[in-house]
Image (cartoon, rainbow, N blue to C red; front, side):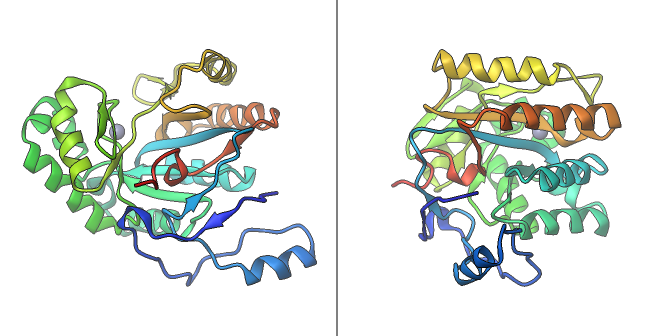
Length: 276
Ligand SMILES: [Zn+2]
């Protein structure tokens, strides 16, 4: 399936996680499995050479852990064999052991799953204006989440703001620019999104899978993405908790899979993220 060249390099100041408890990804033949067992498991943040003939899809799901949505999405991705990133929230993790175990499972699921940072307080409990004005407190909030959840990469999604920051290049709303810039200066990457699969009434997907697929195709065709050949899709775990919407998620995955140009990747492999 994957014939990618993986170069080991400890970018993003990440640290290696123990392979204890990690299951090997399933492999096709016994010859394959002999070969794969000899290959060292990559660490989050390891650089990956992207194929210029492919188009990369980064599924980035926010606000975990939010059971049952998070577990349902995790299981769908697992069954479908697609890679995804969960941007998690410290105060959601801090509630009970069951939620902490969900995050442990995601963290241990690399390279299929990546755990990344979506702040401790979700921007002081959705008070974004205050949050982005208090730069130092906002930075401390992200660092609290990083430590608490043992997040293996310095990759952040800002709550409520489509901001980007990577190696001194910062873009997005003016209101969150200071925080994005400060995070960048501390070696963090801030990842926004190209497409949001929106929701209504808190957790019901707004668009159909076909509409999202159309949007993906049209954005690629018009080359209207943050980086060429890369599409960051934002959605929220809680949107897919109910059966009809779990089916919508599966449907979108099947539509993406039907086009052989598309490859799913975790956000640590987003173009330019590992480069200095
Ligand atoms: Zn959020």
